[in-house]
Length: 361
Image 1 (spheres, helix red, strand yellow):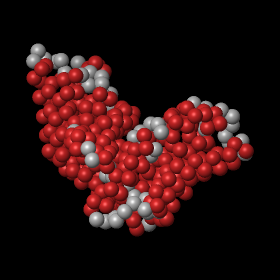
Image 2: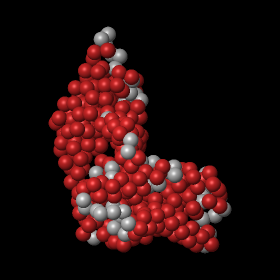
Image 3: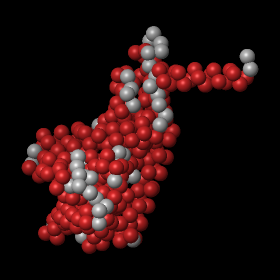
């Protein structure tokens, strides 16, 4: 048998093995499915824990404060198991990823979410590869999954975390230096990411995007969600207003594919509200970084900004929450996105770029 034929047969055998194990190397599976699942894991741990803890602090409930603390403490495992679920990992692999997530998030530092994403994907696929291949699967699968994930975390998580943190710090530094132009850039990019089938929340968390840049990100996300909700009210009424304004603008993705021009109004709104947030109101996200990419989804972005205000008061860097702070948040997150998107949308409707039912869900 020739060497070429042997190579072909080996390649075919490998392809059959990967197919049998449901191991698919694709940008969609890792960059969309896994990333989106990671954001849900973050939401179900760090984000909701922060909200519960903040509520407990405000009403003086130690039970809620403790509950929030417990939820925040399992952010790494929650992200990892969410990623494994998205990759359709078997149960033993899925449960073993808890330890992997804890290791990657802890060793990754400020850039822990990105470390968890990369390490959990590798560990999950390694676990899937050996799953049910031996008679002692109960030992082999957890062993391979945990050791591959933990060893990989020890080797590269600190580097991944440092790199992600450095990129996030660079963006935040540039925003402080050039708040107008970076306000536009961050607002538009993160807002567009929110509407695309990828996770803006996970991106912000991975880069630890807070401060003034986080405020611009909040503005961009709100522009997309509130903007689409307002400009499509004619077609979708109250149900559309709520599902997009408090849910996600990703619901419009199918309509965007059919007519990309419907994306212009909320994106222009983001380009305007971003620099207003950074230059005029100095809106900052000093709560959890994941909140920067949530917009008005469950009012998480606004709760994150409010949490940041409380933390600043506790740290002594802010004396109180002023009326100007509240006016800025309301204008940036709700009023301006709605008004600007309606105005731009009406212009595009008049010139025929947006037609009847182009925005209907």
